[in-house]
Image (tube, rainbow, N blue to C red; front, side, top):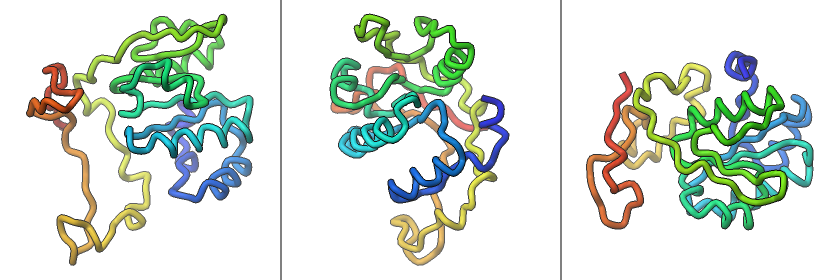
Length: 191
């Protein structure tokens, strides 16, 4: 896991699916693919997981993000994934990687994890708690070629090259249609 954090070559930029798979083959097939998505990206995540399992059947897949607010059994029945992390996944992802590295597969204590047990039954550890200090998990902007992400057609400044940055997580509002409006998601700021 430490190698992943230190090796800048592990970040594969936006690519078409076949180009992505060629890059993966060149670098060596990973033990674990991690994907995230919104509910609106369900068909894309579904297709990508199927393609990964077809090409790299020995690799494990973990899916996180807002796509996982649905019942875990529904996700497992419709997406070829080995694991789901519900809620904020920074801590659970580290715990999952450690369990896979140690080959202990003691998944019961992994925050936010859902998985199939040895009998194929879906087990869920519930949704992970929000990270209290999001600054403990900074986004490594310096590891990305930001020039590739700057767009002239940005809605906020259509005539000036710009990019959005994350300065906080959460929302102060209580919209009735939002599954995060139950008071447990307070606003937290990067320091």
